[in-house]
Length: 327
Image 1 (spheres, rainbow, N blue to C red):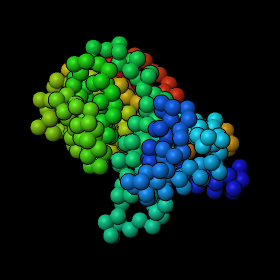
Image 2 (image 1 turned 90 degrees about the horizontal axis):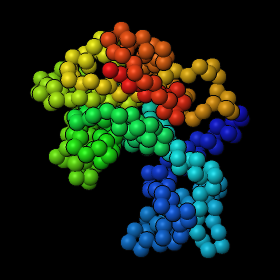
Image 3 (image 1 turned 90 degrees about the vertical axis):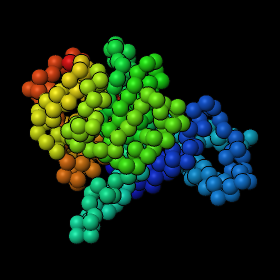
Image 4 (image 1 turned 60 degrees about the vertical axis):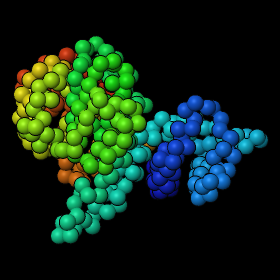
């Protein structure tokens, strides 16, 4: 690996983020080719047209798009790969970009903290994009084997997972808990846009506070299924892991199935050309935020000590990321 690769990758990462955030990548969901004029000839919004033109110009230079003689755009092999992986770029550039840039200059005396530099909305969006692209088919197949009526999502983000569950499975109701106020605002918008107000509610709380909140106790008593994706390591840093898991069992006394997914420490000792996407980014931000990450074997010991039975372990098509189905 050379300096040029790292530098150009940094610029390309931001380009990929904006192609996702602007909605340009989404235009290729239903079409192989897009007419450039439909993107750049927006007379009602000249600023947006100019932005799209600039993004397209540099995407062509980066080899993400191909343009034919009829001014039609199509994704190259690289472009298709980046579109599929856009969630990781949303997570890194949008979610943790300010933190990665500024963490060495944080001044606690001015009220600054690591978390104040994290965009919870983009963390939630990126996680959901990656979930849909790589994990969700596996997760839904496991849900399909359960009799789910009331599900809670710990670390629910923008409620994308809950909305999908309720869309796929008739009669399911959902509760979401998330610490990010921005993610909760986006969740409520998504719930409204999907007409799920009668089936899904979300609460802006730290999960460990929520499970001790007597106002939620009646709702939690009705929960038969608990899911938590990519957040358990945060809870395990806040309190003893076995204590957290035992607390979850008592908080949801009628839950018979727990779906816990997380990303674990990789075995790699040094970055090289074959290092997969996401692993080092995930470890990088958590290392500098002083959040301990765990090995896969650690989780299995914690689950067993807390009294859970591990019924299934499924690889989720993202490096070092697994789903545990617990009883």
